[in-house]
Structures are given as C-alpha cells and as structure tokens.
Length: 494
Ligand code: IFM
Image 1 (cartoon, rainbow, N blue to C red):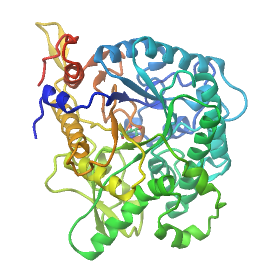
Image 2 (spheres, rainbow, N blue to C red):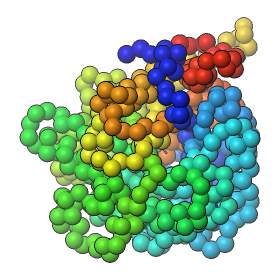
Image 3 (cartoon, rainbow, N blue to C red):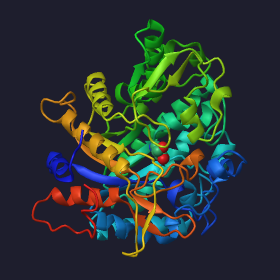
C-alpha cells in the first residue's frame, strides 16, 4: 500500500484527534534536579547490563530544561494534541505525603505553553516511573500502591484538572507486569513468572481508584486507560499452536481489557491454580470496570505464537535488539513468540503488518459490544536512522521513509477499518497519537531504538526534524483546505 499525504489527509474525519506521545521518564532527564525523588527505574537503569550500552536516562532529551523548544516544534508540526505523562516522583517524591513545588510548577508551565500554542493536553498519570519508596515496599505486588495512585490522581486533578482535555490513568499495565514483574526485563526487575499476577490486579485497581478520584474532583476532561493490543496469530494450523495463541491472547490482551470493559477476568485466569493463591475483594472488580469516556489502545504489531518453549520467549532478533539473552527468562514456557517469515521488521525486530491494525480493531469491536470511543494512544516504529549532512545546503537531513510509510499505512488501516463498511465499523475511533515526538530513552533498549519524528543528538541535544515530521506536517495541514502550508521542507518526502 502506498498512501500520499493528501490521500491520507482526505481519510481523516474532521473531529479526529491527531497527536504525538511521550513519557516523562523517557524524555525529561534532570533526574536529580529541583527536588525530584528517585524512581525505581533510576535504580534499575543503573544496574550494569540492565540497559543496552548501559545507556543512562539521567539527561536523555533534557526536555525538563528544553520544554519550550519542544512545544514550539509541536506547534510547527501542527498537531491537535500532545500526550505526555506526569513524573510521579517529580511531583510527589515519596509516592505519598509531601509535594514538590518545583515539579508542580514544571507541569503548570508545560500545560500553559501547550494551551497557548493551541495544543490540547492528554495526560498520563502513570507511565512506569514508580517512586522508589513505593517500589521498595513491594511496588505493584503491594495493594497499597494502587491507593497511592488514586491519591496521586486527586493531586493531579486539583492542580491541573482545569487544563487537561483527556486523562489516561495507567499506560500498558501488561508491559509493566510482563517485563517488570514476570520476566525481569524492566524495573523493578522481578522474575516472578506467573506469580506476577498481583501486579496485574493492583495496576488495574490503581486505574479504577484513579478514575474515582478524577470523577469525584469533577474534572472536565475525558477519562480512560491505555492498554497495548497485539492480535495473536497461531504459527500454524496445528491445534497446539492455536491453543498457544489463544493462551497468549488471554495473557497479554484479555487479562487487561476484560476486567476494565466487562468487570471480569477471563475464565481461564479465574480457574488457573495460581489465581487461587492470590485473593482480592470482589468489589475491586466494580472499581476496575467503571464507565470510561474513551479506551486507549496502543498498537505496534501482531504476534505469531507457537507451542513449546522455543529458544526463549521472543525470537533471537528481537531479543538482541533489547540487549538480552532471553533464553533463560521463561524456562519451560508452554509457548513462545516466533518470527514472521514474510514480514519486514523494525530495528527492534518487530514485524511490520499494517493490515493487523484493522484486525486488532475488529477483534476489539467484536469482543466488547459496549466499548467506549477508542483512541489509538500510541503507534510508531524504531529504525536505524541515517543522518545525512548536506554540506552545500548547510543542513542535516534524516530520510526516514520507512517510519513515514509505517505511520501512513497504519493510520490508513485504522481509518479504513472504522469507516462505514469497514471491518470495525461499529468502533467509534477518535484519534491517533504517534509514538513518539522525538527519539528518547527506550527503557531497557536504551538509545538504540529511535522512534522519533524528531532526531535528537544525545551528545549535543540538538533536535532535527526527520522526513517523517515534514510528511506528517503536510498531512496535518492538508486536512483543512485553505490553511497555508507552514513547513519549510514540507515537500521533502512524499
Ligand atoms: O516506548 C514505549 C512506551 O513507553 C510504551 N509503549 C511502547 C513504546 C515503544 O516500545
């Protein structure tokens, strides 16, 4: 499929939100500045070998000090909305109790700058940077962390509620539970395998408590959660592969979507033996499944699943990009992820399959008849970008056509699926946010997986828009005929 900027713009409905997304820990840097407390991630990232190349998040994009420049780049891009997260340890260093005025002031300035630039703020309350004292007390294994997130939501509502258009309570609880608590690849580095289940339940409870807090503060903004969704595809017609794909679907998709959207864990989970060792009050399910104004969905790729332990939980190519030998992380696993023989891949080794964006939306629409409006809160791709110095023009050019194509094809797939006659036509799709505004600290993959529309030189911190930025700028400007094109270089790549 090849989609031009103007063709794509013509597919975008008038009221559809186009945005870019980031997360505090991945872009802010300034970890020990102005009263920020440590996060569990600060410690995890300092462990030798935990991060590819031992990349440090200490400075990252230094967004904390360069925020006005970054907002100016967003304004120039022409987006409708910016999704960012509040750094919990910058605002409330201990995760409970005293607040840090400098942290509150930073987000005050960011919100004001966005609104002055005509950009609508979408705020994520929890994007993985748990304050260290909470992690040390058990993190998401500990029920109390959910209540602390509820309190944090009240704080955010009282300081920022007047200016936030949309709230995301928790980002991708599946990634936190799987990578952080089951496999030890992310902070807090626990390898509890199936015993990680309490971290699932407590994040979902934290989501529900945060919804309650925001509702009781009467915030005018819309409220939702963000779950990542990957269609699970059996490696073959073999019944064991099909069973494995079904189990993986439960473990990575339904385990998080069902409780929020139906108030119940999937039957298999409830029946599973490990579940009986962990009890929770029944009332939790009511808290978890409160009505939402929107459901946030992150789509990056489908997953091919095969029976048996395989060489490790993920294919070698992907594992290498994450800098890990994963063969020991899930010993005796009953199934594993396997590579697609026919797919191009991102730098991470993730298969590029835009048609599965439609599959993801169709599956969600079919499974959850009462699904609220959906917003794709993240989508994007990491590639090894090439920085070209055009000495004559005295410019740097970053021709990232693969990223541009990835975004065009995935957005087109989502819009076509949800248009009348599409495979997910019953879904009310309200927006798409590109991950990410700029290259940043990609968790345990460090700086080796750049997702940005804007290149960041991590030595000099100079920002350079890539071809995908200029292309998106043209898409955005073309939505409203009559508005003059803003961008120098908008035509660089079509
Ligand atoms: O960088 C992450 C983000 O923090 C959560 N969703 C997936 C992105 C790419 O891996």
